[in-house]
Amino acid sequence: PPAVAASAAASAPPHLLLICFPGQGHVNPMLRLAKRVAAKGLLVTFSSLASVGPKLAAAAGVSAGGDGVPVGRGRVRFEFLEDGDPGPDLDDLMRHLETAGPPPFAALLRRQAEEGRPVACVVANNPFMPWASDVAAGEGIPTAVLWVQSCAVFSLYYHQVHGLVEFPHEDDPTARFKLPGLPEMSAADVPSFLLPSNPLKLHADAIIRQFRTIGRASWVLVNSFAELEADVVAALPGVTPRPPELISVGPLVELQQQEGQEEDDAVRGDLIKAADDCVEWLDAQPPRSVVYASMGSVVVLTPGEVAEMAHGLASTGRPFLWVVRPDTQPHLPAGFVESVSGRGAVVAWSPQERVLAHPSTACFLTHCGWNSTLETVAAGVPVVAFPQWGDQCTDARFLVEELGMGVRLRGARREAVREAVKAAVAGPRAGEMLASARRWSAAARAAVAPGGSSDAHIQAFVDEVARRAQG
Ligand code: UDX
Image (cartoon, rainbow, N blue to C red; front, top):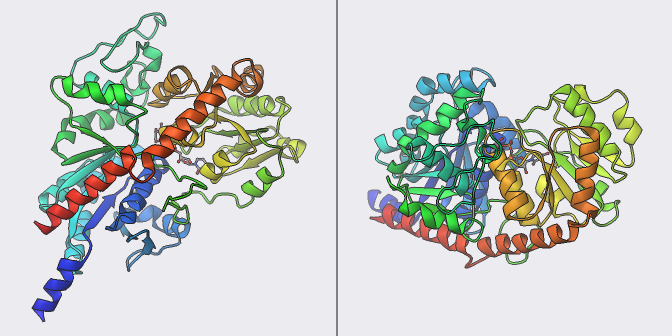
């Protein structure tokens, strides 16, 4: 009878639906946000494109539809949009989704209501699917955006999009500029998408375009934490036109071995299957001995750079665990894997946060994607920063110069790799870097621990979603 159905709906937890671009750098923070929110009692649906459905379902151990799995006091379930995927090229995918994305997404939202779990809030991660927020608004559903890069990067984009800053010429490495709440910077510290030399125009346009509409979202959540980026966040309300308020909910990382955390990494979002034996391999290495190297999910090194990196890692005299994705493995020097066997391990994908949390790991040679940056901060592992493009340039500047957590690698020559690793692990400043890394790790863990700054922001967000769902 209708009265029973109405009371069941009233007692059901509010339903939050996330729609996620199918790239690893987006899936990880979105899925971790899903789990944090579910842990506080919401029903959370994680949705993405059908092209990644089977991989995500396999990694998470959850099939699409149905009730999903319990996470803390709530549940996480999965849904995938049939969009007629045109293939992996980002330009093609974005153009295709402009028209192919909205109809199945609107249908997905309506189906949730028909099946008795109306959506109380949609969390989108623009920029590559900017239509998602519009579709949700069209259905009368409040929206939130998850910004998956740093607040510093947000500020740099915001100032540029609104004509509030002119960056120095790229050919002048000595020229500096200054924005509120940020240290003096040079062109090399700016996200490369904002510089004239950027070849990835479509990426840049997509990221810039979202700033025109981001203020329409009811919440702008950011994967950062107050203590890490206090100055830049405090300065933003003074900027004209005024940016939306940034609500820090991070670091959205899998915190390993932490007491009192409801988080666990049983529900993972790997789009490449992680090697099973990394942790056992690390167990067999001496404490703080291993160089972990990974360039994330999208950076492609040239064959020459891969070969130099190989020789450089092998020449450090240390054990190393190197992620070389399947698309890059053909560029490894012939016989390399066999020649380093025992001391060096090459894997197609690793369980990265477990590797970083392992006591054998001494340093992380990283491209400084924002997820990797936050993961190494949370784990307290010093870095060799080797940024390639986009926000990685800004993240590297912060890791090395502001957080004091490592050294910079410029160019993938084998001698440079060897010297940078040596400086990060055993050089005269290595102890200082490790101490800084450990301090930032403690701050990161405190932010997401019960009652910490980001935990409190997530609770407030969940409460407000619930309040609106009831009202
Ligand atoms: C992309 C952009 O390149 C990056 O600049 C932006 O900040 C986010 O989107 P990506 O290059 O993949 O991301 O890097 P990153 O942000 O570090 O994300 C990679 C994720 O994959 C991390 O969460 C990392 O833990 C995970 N990973 C990586 C693994 O689990 N195993 C691996 O072997 C390598």
